Image: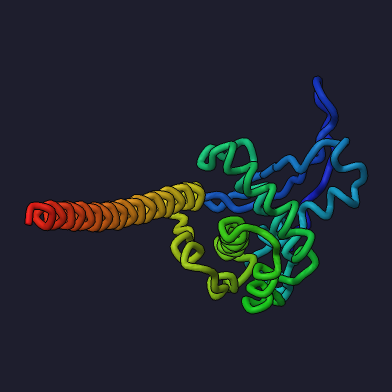
Length: 250
């Protein structure tokens, strides 16, 4: 079991950077030195805060150690690991806008509510109740659910957890359709949301058009009836006038 090392590296430009170093087996079996930047010295002001950033990484590099398999990291640790691996600038598979969106959902909603939970303690029913209690639009709650699902799928991929409880979280029809596949990419969730919103808008426009057509038909029918009544009144008036003239002639 290895703990790795957390060190501060000075740079010619900009603030110093906290780095985590460890070794892992390469394709040929030889040990390879690895390094990942955790953040600047301005962001992580003590070595204790830097050590908190590497809990998930330590768990990953010791995944084959039976002693670490018995342990469960927290949602906050998994969130940090996800940002280090997936939301880093070097990862070009996810667009910049998507990275900002995912980081925002994690920082504002998921980490404050679920950060201290152990991964094994997160329950689908509790997450479902939490989502229902949020005073947010259904689309936003749907995206929150999907980001949490991405988070746990990331943990499964790196063997940091055994299951994804978010897959059992029920949502509206929109949320059911927007379950990300991870095959095309994480951006599919945002794209599917936009497509469904356009479809819903077109359906509403179609309903409005049909309602206006019904009103137009009803209006024309009313006009015809009024015209018929008017014609009948005119005909009656002409008949009375003719009867009067005949009576005078007699």
